[in-house]
Length: 129
Image 1: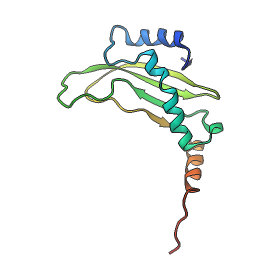
Image 2 (image 1 turned 90 degrees about the vertical axis):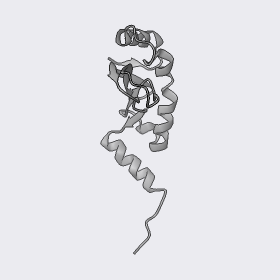
Image 3 (image 1 turned 180 degrees about the vertical axis):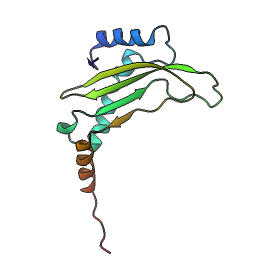
Image 4 (image 1 turned 30 degrees about the vertical axis):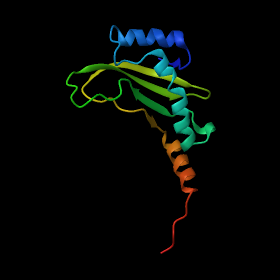
C-alpha cells in the first residue's frame, strides 16, 4: 500500500476496509490528512527539507482515555513515509488496545539521524576541561 496522504478517495477506501464498523476511536480521513502539517513541523526542527525523504512516522488514533476506562477499544494505526514531495500512507491496521494510544512519533534513517545530530551540535560548544 502506498497512498498519497492528500488522496481522499483512496484513503477513504483503505480506512473503510481497515476500520469496518468501528468508528468511535478509529481514524478518519480528516485525521490522517491532518497529520501532514505536524509531521512536517517535527521534521523541519530536525532536518533540512531536502533530507526528509525516507523518514517514517507512526500514528495511533484514539488518544488518551481516563484511567478509570476499563474497556478494550479498537483504534487505527497508520504508518507513513515521507516521499520527495509529500507524505504517503504505507500501512494501516486495526488494533484492539487497553488504555492510551501512543502519540505521533517519527523514525529517521541512520543517515538522517547523523544529519540531525550534526545540525543540533552546531547550536552549542563544549567547554574545555
